[in-house]
Structures are given as C-alpha cells and as structure tokens.
Amino acid sequence: MRDIISNFPVEKFKDIQTPFYYYNTDLLKETLAVINNETSKYDNYHVHYAVKANANPTILSIIKDAGLGADCVSGGEVETALKAGFPPEKIVFAGVGKSDWEIILSLEAGISCFNVESIPELENINRIAKEMNKYASVALRINPNVDAHTHSYITTGLSENKFGIDISLIDKVLDKFTELNNVKLIGLHFHFGSQITDMDSFRSLAIRINEIQEIFYRRMIIVENINVGGGLGVDYQNPDKNAIPTFREYFETFRKHLALRPIQHLHFELGRSVVCQCGSLISRVLYVKEGVDKKFVILDAGMTDLIRPALYQAYHKIENLSATNTEKEDYDVVGPICESSDCFGKAIELPITERGDIFAIRSAGAYGEIMASQYNCRKLPKPYFSDTI
Image (cartoon, rainbow, N blue to C red; front, side, top):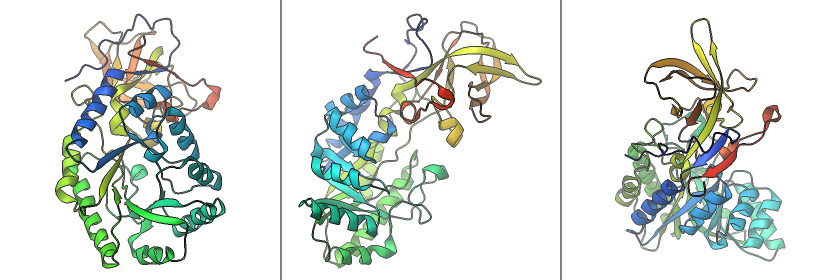
C-alpha cells in the first residue's frame, strides 16, 4: 500500500490559493517504470500515452522521458505532443472528426499513423496527401461491437457508437485502397471503452480481433500493426491500496488470447491508468452549511475544476487533510458553481469539518485539469508537483 498523499504539505500550502492540482511525480515515474518493465517482456509491444487524459507540460515531459509515444485526438494535441518532445514517429492521430488543417499539420510533422474512422475520412486524407505530394500511413479503426460493460458515455466499441468502421463495411473499405494512391494501410485499430477493470472484456476484444484478422487474411492482407487502444481502469475506491493498475495481467491477457502474426507489432494507448492516481484536486472549505436533514461542506473547488462527478456521476474518494479529530459525520460535499449538479459526493462520512479545512479529491490526475473550464468566469486551477515544492 502506498500512502500517496499522507505527506502532503498542508502547512506549506496554507497561503496558496485553492483550488489547485497536486501531482505526486514519484508515483507517476513508478507507474511508468512498471509499464516499461512489463512491456519489455515482449519484443513487439509499444505503448502510446493518450494525451487527452492529461496534457500538463510537466506530466508530458516525464512520460516522454520514459520512452512512451503519444496518442492524440486533435491537431492541438499533436502540436502539444511535438512541443513536449515526443518524436513524430511515435505519434498516432486518432479521432472521429479530423479537420483539414489537422491532417495537414500531421502530414507536415511526419507522424507515424492516422487511425481512420470512416471512408470519407480516408478519402480526404488521401486527397490532402496527394496535394502535398506526400503519403499517409493509416490504420483502420474497426468497431468490434464488443461491450466494455462500463458507463455509456465512455463506451466506444458498440455498433450504436459514433466511433470506428462497422465490421460489415470492411470489404468496401479495402476496395477503396485500390483507388487511393496516397494512403498506405499499415494497421488495424480498436478501442472499445474506458475504465475497464474486468480482464474478460479485454479477452473478448482479443478474440474478436482474431476473427477480424481472418477477414483480412482471406484477402491476403496482413497488416504490420495491431492497436488495441487503452481502456484499462483504476481503483477509485482505494487509491492508496491500488495506486498502480494491474498492468501485468492486462498485457498478459493480450499475449494469451490475441493471435498475432509473426511480423505484427502490438500497440496500446493508455491514458487514465498512467496518470490518474498521481493527481489530486486540493480545495479549501468555504462553509459548513446546516440543512434541514443534512449538512453540506461547500468547497472552493467545483465542477469547473473537476467535471467528472457532474458529467459521469463518477466517484472520487474525498479526504479532509486538516482534520485532527476522530469523530465523524455525514456530509454532502459540493462546490460553489451555480448548477445543482455541482456535487462531488453525497452522504460522505468525514471527520467533523470546519471552515478553512483542506480537502483532497483523489484519483484526479486523469480527466481533471485537462477538462477544467472557466464557467462562471472562474480561474483555472494551477498545478503543483511533489518534487518541486
């Protein structure tokens, strides 16, 4: 068990404006070391970090230094990855709606691959590449129609979702390559959801990929790269007990059940599992409000700083870092935003809380700072790092 935040310097931050994000860089580096150790067991495994999870420059620098590539879903993320020092040959560009300027930017930079999600997109990339006298390497994102058994907002691999190319259209897509001379098929891409903790879901994905590979093989096509996306979940309930996800079991699941051809490389796009547990949102109690039949802790952090609870009804462990007493009460922990959905948790058992107490909202390193907004004209939360304070 890692006590990630017990050494949080409450006294040092007393005079610093809250809310802010606090990152344990030691944990991030340890997580990356585990990923590298596990993938080093396989000659053909490659990990790309999903930039959408957290694009803080310091976080990206640490991940880049660990040797991971970058998985981007916008031109802005491609620019951010390049600025952070990720080699173009380690950058892949996914996303269901790539605009012309994003494609041009990526071709000029010489990124390794576009993950293509439709025939019109494939045609457009070919057109732009031809106009630029370039060739674009592409992977087809196939919708595997596999249920990730997670929240509907973060499920991406069912036929009802907007992502990917339906299996029934594979032959039609492959026929297109005979007409398009400036795109080269180098891989297949799959991503079917996020916050997945049941390895049976990844096993089902591997088996479905095996079936899809047979469709390509019947046409005498063996692509060089298979990209299984990411989706590995984290333990939001016990961030100290399970600070580092089950990477060994995750990678072994694909080794056991995915039938790669000898020439094929396996790519992963991990985001949440890399950065989630190293980050916490730190906030100060503004008021403790007595309701009719409940008490409210009103924080100076709100859904503008961490939107996941309001957007997904997501759970985050909430801790009072200042409390010294052992007596506890139940509170609804809410923010100051003028929205009823601005609530971090209801009936949360906490030590008796007072105005000015410092709170930590845990497991906020992924989809926290990156999704912050200035709604209500609020300031964006600043980041602080454990190795520079």
